[in-house]
Length: 616
Image 1 (tube, one colour):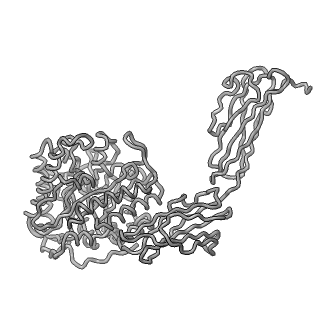
Image 2 (image 1 turned 90 degrees about the horizontal axis):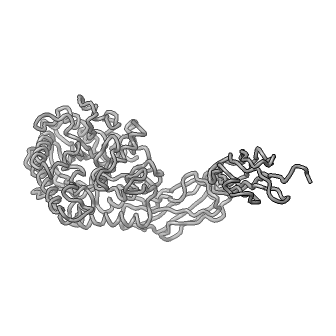
Image 3 (image 1 turned 90 degrees about the vertical axis):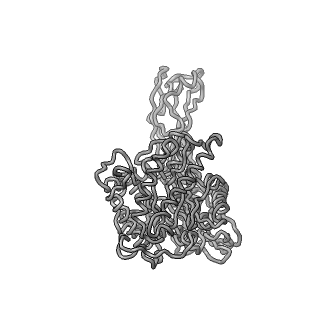
């Protein structure tokens, strides 16, 4: 992901989106906040000391496919060492490290990732920060990166180290290829030297999402320039492999991660994308997943799309499975490992249930096909760096359940937790997730309790089938606790998924009092009327529905003014004019109230313009 402290918008339609997948994810986090254990890996990441400088650690005889599988599920240390910006005080590494909202990273924070069960930490880095002449990496910046890498390796995790967006200089490759390739070579020459003695728990990644050049090939237009764009990407990846393999120490055998075309799945599976020639055959392919972008990235509507707050339709799952099957067919089935180095979702406009559903579904779809998923995360979005724990333990449990390939997961998708409804027979919907692609839902059970599970009032019993819906009939008004569990075809039950509901089918009481019930004198003038609205329950909506005169004594617009219908308007003006004949003019004012459960009540009050005041 390309990240930035401030959202700068999209300058080249959705092509820019492909180059800045984390823009919206991190922006929301900055606005808000400026489990299970991992089995220890016996091999040390390096010999002799924590810098790996005195001895070369042993490299295992392990394939890249096996190594990637060992990683399990990973997470990104986002918006930290890859922070860039001309506004940052460039006198210290700390100024960059904390520029996008991160606290100073500590060993405790890094160990926390491992304690939560993550098997690989991806560390994005902007190596151009504080860079010296001839593209010399700043020694302090390199030392700080090595310190964080060491902490991660010491905690038992794998590490993926890359060149991240790094200020966007990758964009110059088509127009300034020689200079850009020189800078790229200089960076990786220094990095391979610095980390040459580290063992195979350290993986290098050729670049982030920057392998895309809209000025060379606009993939929303024609195919003009397409072959040249892929050829440039393939050349950069080949240079990356050649630099690493030609350096000393363990780099000859190091497992490597090479970037796909903009790390987009459909473009990376294109036949024009070529894996580098690697004499060691130790390369994996990098893809990212933020699909559909209107759900995964947007927190508010943009010029190019409408933000989605929900995900999980049959079409959504079909799209997810289609794309993951593409990766499996093109790479996994051919023995080529794949790491999904980033996937994530913008959270501001979504419920926690939707966030969990999306993230666990993507994790499961990837993991079940042999793709290693690495969650995109920034300061305190999912992992709380202040307490070194995940914020959402339910999400963590669901993610780790995928890794463990154990019991399935059931997630209730109908209603919000604590929601008030006006149905005595609510339909409960859920989704079934299982890390094993061969496992399907074989049975389910739904229960309801009106006393906090001191007893079960309704129990469906074990029902066979793959249904994801069940109607609880005849629930009385009151507070209810609902739970669902599902069993896979191997006999493993999921944990219960819970939802609390408040059932209320009684319409609210609505009382409207006007400050004037009679308009007199009837002098053809507009008179302000004020309403006071009273009710017996907390309402979600009250609105002025209508004002209806019994007799037309002029145009409606001349008789009723300043009434804002459809809103909670309590002040308006009515025309005080006598009707022809002896009948009074009567205005009927109607208000509508809707309580939080959706029950509706209407109340009418009247204002009269008498024909006279004689009483005759």
